[in-house]
Amino acid sequence: MDRTPPQPVKDPPGLVRSGPFSLERLLSHTDPGPAEESEAFVHLIYEQRRIDVSSDHNRKARR
Image 1: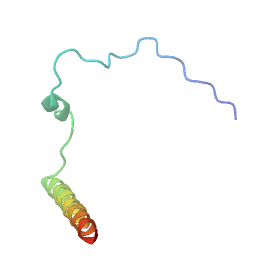
Image 2 (image 1 turned 60 degrees about the horizontal axis):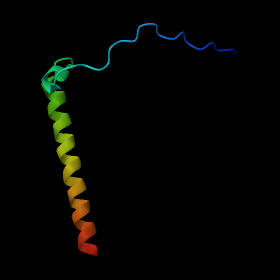
Image 3 (image 1 turned 90 degrees about the vertical axis):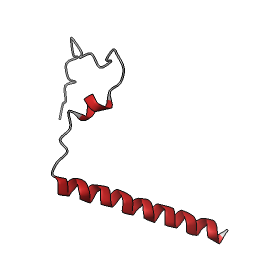
């Protein structure tokens, strides 16, 4: 199967923005989803953190 390369973009978008970085501006373009989904996500992050800390503590105790 012959594939032709895509045509080059004649006018690429400006990816560099002048001015200070704004986390609020970046986050304003994301959809947070339902509250239940956010709570489950945060719970999962904290649970993983507890597992990581616990395993790190057990590794240090064995030395």
